[in-house]
Image 1 (tube, one colour):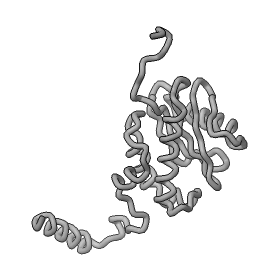
Image 2 (cartoon, one colour):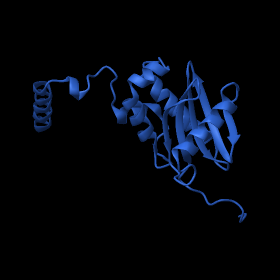
Image 3 (cartoon, one colour):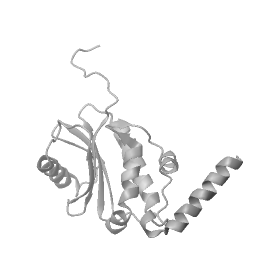
Length: 178
């Protein structure tokens, strides 16, 4: 084996971020603390990526020694970043899973306003797909099943204590009967 080849690693993804159509950050997760350690460096990198990709029709870009796959929808840009040696198909499978899962959570209305209203669900999706840079899942149906997120459910703060207690009692009753 060639000694210049990097060792294989499970740490495939270096970063994931979603930008609006002006290049402003809506969501970002960086998995390599040495890559861009400060917020300023991260935002500069995101701005450079956006400037290179927002008018391009490609799906893959190479910038600053990174392989970047991306997809846009209405006023959002989804990005998955890996090292220069990373397999583009692996990164693309992560991107497609992220996009399809997000699309499902947003009820096929993948735009900035809906994303901001359902941000907690999108963060859950990202966390189910990638953990510390390791790809855990690339099937959107599996991700959605694990997340079990319902956009139409009321958050706990909007439920009364009586509703929460009643729901808990029913769950306990059904688990005992099983």
